[in-house]
Image 1: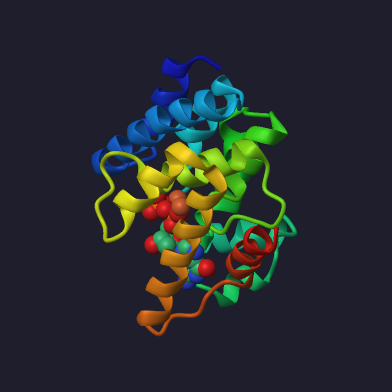
Image 2: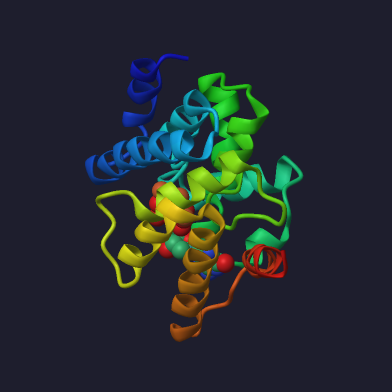
Length: 185
Ligand code: DGI
Ligand code: FE
Ligand code: FE
Ligand code: FE
């Protein structure tokens, strides 16, 4: 699928703010793909579609999780986690994206997973550091991302876990497992 067609399809799903974020992720993901030798075309496509399901009603996402045999564990955790796996499903169904590597990059862009592929890491980090992001610690991850994608992953996961814990929120086990797998590596 061409960039323009993908952007056209995704724009209708998002707010203007989230669309601008998507453009930032696209630009950053292509940059990181070139730096680390990932497939830039796949990185671009995954980035464009990564937040496709962000604004779907919770009830619709819940039904997809239940009917498509996704982890039931998702449902006891924050609904912010749902748009990633549900997005992978809907992008295939509604936009006709069939590349499993691209779909996995969408599927794991929020939690990560142990043993992430290069493309998955590119999308995870690009989502975290794209130019419109401004939160404490993002500049450090931007700098790390130019040197080591894994170090950028570790710091982004650490920040996310600490952020959730400070708010007394639960941390999705896969997020912790992703962190552990990178640190133990
Ligand atoms: O969709 P985005 O805002 O671009 O970013 P995202 O998909 O990476 O993350 C969405 C939200 O999910 C973000 O506010 C952080 C949160 N999140 C990430 N990992 C976990 C989590 N929330 C909980 N409760 N548990 C997690 O493990
Ligand atoms: Fe997201
Ligand atoms: Fe993210
Ligand atoms: Fe995002």
